[in-house]
Amino acid sequence: MSMLILSRLLGLVRVRPSKFNDVKFEPYECGVQQIGKRWGQFNFRYYTFALLFVVLDVVTIFLFPWALKFNQLGLFGFIEMTIFMLILLLGYVYAWRKGALQWD
Image 1 (cartoon, rainbow, N blue to C red):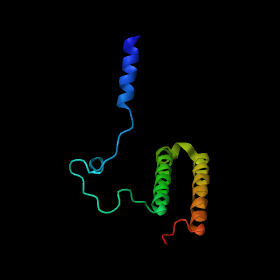
Image 2: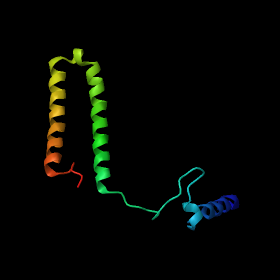
Image 3: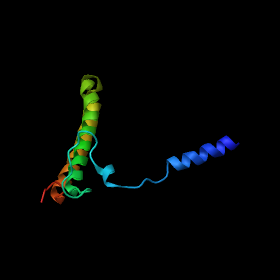
Image 4: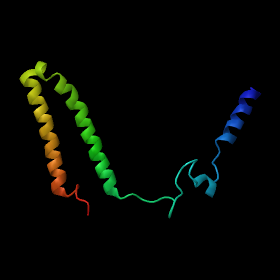
């Protein structure tokens, strides 16, 4: 029982909050020295384009198996993928008209 309590106390000491200092913010080994503020904010537009990139990757994931089995799926598979692409196209047109893809 005492070993359990002792190990619990030692575990708490190891996971205690660490103190921040300048050395911890230095780049590790071959990193580039920082210039300016440590925590710079990204423009929100970067996240929009990153999300668009992820969506296009997901579309590729769905298109690849469909393209491999295109001959076996027949008309039903073609109509199903056409509906899927139309939904994506409508979303893209909506985002375009709202100005979400503009970099101002």
